[in-house]
Figure (cartoon, rainbow, N blue to C red):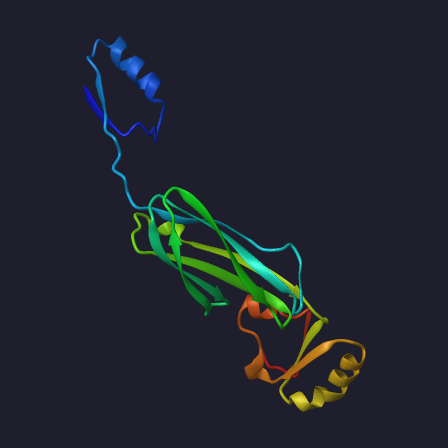
Length: 193
């Protein structure tokens, strides 16, 4: 048996397999093949502060590595919309810490997605990372009614007690979990199932 290998054991126990083969009297030769040098860049991680206040400046810290000097584009998406884009020169065998300043002006839950687009890359599956950020503000309550103006007195009373309210009809109801998580309570009245 002639084994051509890159030296990475991916399945089973190679040492035991070689011993078993030799016990059976089978001649065994292994040739190490040096793996080719592939251009590779990756986002290794993204950090955000544990707590973020409303209208507070903070940074997304993105750790990026590259095996080669490689010009790249870094994109930041918030809730699916492109927020920032810039170019970055990645240096060979170095890690880059990129600080991306942010500020959120509305309370809610936000999904940040950071995308790396290097000029040369072997594996694109490690070029995207996402983090979720929750920003607290005054408690938000969604008041929904087939005739939203009927809930105006309730909305005014809640607002006077420090709540932030949104009045809406059937068409303004949240459709996704991310939209629902912006509210601490959702009050439905006279809405047909």
